[in-house]
Image (tube, rainbow, N blue to C red; front, side, top):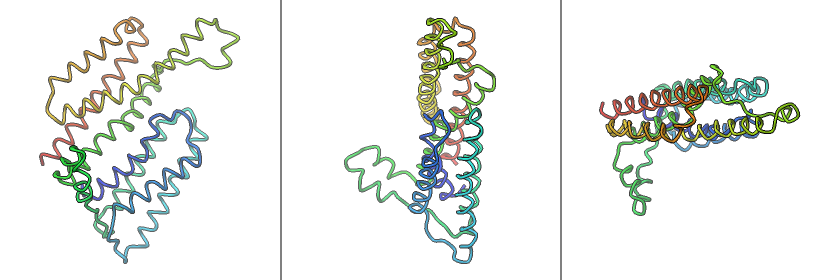
Length: 266
């Protein structure tokens, strides 16, 4: 995969990161902001367009805008299937990125390591990044972003499809259910949102450990998470939800770490 394709993929995944905490359909201005952010960042990254193929780049740009409009329209109509729509949108954007980054476009990625060198004097991690190859930096960022939002969307979609999501309370339940039951349902909804953030941190840690070949430390991470939820595991429904989410997190983050590690070694 070319450096430009990796750079544009990072731009795409970064612009979609706010969806991590968005459980409602996206608003029109949010879709426009996502589109504009991708365009601006892509212009900052890419250079050297082939003038003979400028018309095709224009077609891809129009397709990019149309895809965002279609995504917004579909989310308003299919509010119960947001995660699948968002995963499909990500795949569509990556497909456009792959075409745009093909050699025929003449586009190449700018090297931002000189900028990192300027700012690295006051921040050590930037100094390490400035010494690494641009492709290595982009590959690690791609894997990390995939572990955060896209893996989260896949896990939540599977959990909801299997009806393992903890049921939250609804306003219409107030008159028909006991107060204790309503509190339990509200707690279940809070637990679901809390589990999302815990899962993100879990995948980031697993990705970093696999990338660093620290496989023995994975057992510590999983043990710590299990101990924190030990009493809740007595509830079978919660236990199934917990185990499915945890196992999918481990598999997805581990796979991302191994793929990026193989890329860096190759």
